[in-house]
Length: 206
Image (cartoon, rainbow, N blue to C red; front, side):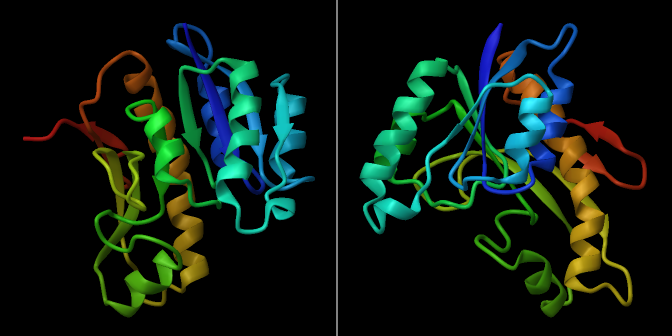
């Protein structure tokens, strides 16, 4: 059984989706939810679900990311995870930290990568006039929002969509895609999963 640590910075809706999926014959279980934000809403939700929590506040470390990550490592070491899932964790990780977890750390990003790495993805998709938008789960590498793609879910951009409206429609796709990818990944399968909102059907790459 794989042990999964989930890193969050906010309300933790993707964390909840992941944790709820890890039951029954799932090859993994959540062992820790860690946040860099004291009082993040997701911490209380994790506690309600019976998952251990930890906080490493990034603010006292200022720009010393290595010192911050050393504390994160200490918290993770106690939980002994096999896999780390970044779920709305709003800190850029150093290459040294990523190297420690290369091939064992996943992230979900609210765009159809390689489009729109970084922030404000929904607004950028609308400004570009894209007809489709969605989310991507990928392995984490030292380059921001890069790494092998393990899954994507897409939807059609509608006339009148705003960044907030688009974000609210993409979020349920995130909650469907991330658990599906984690189940496959924890079982040793890195074959990408592709979901379409219209059918919610998965398909293999051709």
